[in-house]
Amino acid sequence: MNELDHKPISNMQRAIGELRELIFSGQLSPGSDHLESELAERLGMSRTPVREAALILESQGLLELRPRKGVRILPVSATDMREIYDVLTELESLAAERAAASGYSAHELNQLALSIQDMENAVAAEDREAWAQADDAFHRELVRLGGNTRIQNIVGMMSDQVRRARAVTLFIRPMPTQSNEDHRGVFDAIRDGQPADARRIHRAHREQARNMIVGLLEKHHLQLL
Amino acid sequence: MNELDHKPISNMQRAIGELRELIFSGQLSPGSDHLESELAERLGMSRTPVREAALILESQGLLELRPRKGVRILPVSATDMREIYDVLTELESLAAERAAASGYSAHELNQLALSIQDMENAVAAEDREAWAQADDAFHRELVRLGGNTRIQNIVGMMSDQVRRARAVTLFIRPMPTQSNEDHRGVFDAIRDGQPADARRIHRAHREQARNMIVGLLEKHHLQLL
DNA sequence: GCATTAATTAATGCATACGTAAAAAAGTGC
DNA sequence: GCACTTTTTTACGTATGCATTAATTAATGC
Image (cartoon, rainbow over all chains, first blue to last red; front, side, top):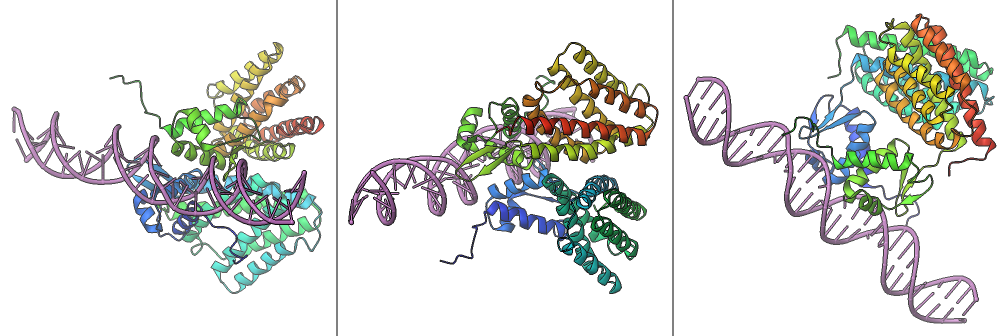
């Protein structure tokens, strides 16, 4: 036997992962309806695990089960995005403050520093996809350092929605040079053990991002529908 | 036919509600395990809707599905409670700020005022249960006025956990007289349209509550297990 | 031709059945 | 009596079947 094949992943788990990918990649587009039986066939399993996966994803706000109408992929409106950023702003700001108060060593902050470097390289190369990926990594690591499992979960769910909107916004927004400066500021505050600064700078960063994104969505009448 | 019986509630919906009640009432105690088939029999339905309900409740942090061990009712530790209050503090503070910035009329703030009155009466009568109920109503209404569906959902989930801990803490904590003063302060700030004050006062209120509750749990070595 | 009703179709919500793998129990050798 | 193996039991994960009811289509009356 091979001691590498650790876990026999359940079909329901696989359904969650694959549905997520189909949603994020846009193959299941916002606003579209899909019968449970269709999805089951598509994923090569019976309705049961697909339905269970759909219930989970519904509770995470990615889709909606509507009796007889099928599974509806939820669109993300400008209003939704404003709400999402409001939550992110509050919870990540706390994470930044806590991280700064934790007295992390330079070594422990290495991952965070790397993400910033990646973002700066990406901006220099004008590679928006790479920037988005590094930005995700930065925020994820920040929340991890802030240390609160519930905040990690919630922020993770909200970030999923931001990722979906990014498919639309990433290429019409300006190059995120300001954003990189903000990140550097947050990092410095954490490294120097300045919780209040970390909170304040990160909050301003997220509020600015929110205004920019929501502004774009409203200006272009984008409902992601 | 009777036009009052609106919706034929689904078994899964009923399972969610009844399991929640069993958990909150302590009939399913923290840390205990229960087979899906047991719960199904108890609720008078098949395993399918019970299992679906359990998956939902798992995603809300009330229980955990452990293969072959059954459904485990999650205990709430002091650490959990600290995390929960941290989230509540951040998100409710934003709600208070937004409510104060919204320019609500005295009429629209009526419900909030009533809850405060109820709390004051309850304290005067030393009726802790009544106080807890009014306190719930106050916080729920505050978040409703703050106006963000995502925050409402998240705060609702966290409040569920607080309710569970309250079964233990409500009767060993001091009479919540300070708490009532805080509520009055938050209300005044909202009524007078002072967002910064509303935020600040509410934050202090929640931080104090957190310290008190977590302190109690740690002091008494209560794990709610 | 249009509105209303009846018949048909189809998708769900739930019950049930079953293979699989983990856990428990029984058996075996020493 | 104890460690180790084998058997049995059990609970889950998933597939399948079916009654119910919403949605759609056909039919009927005017």
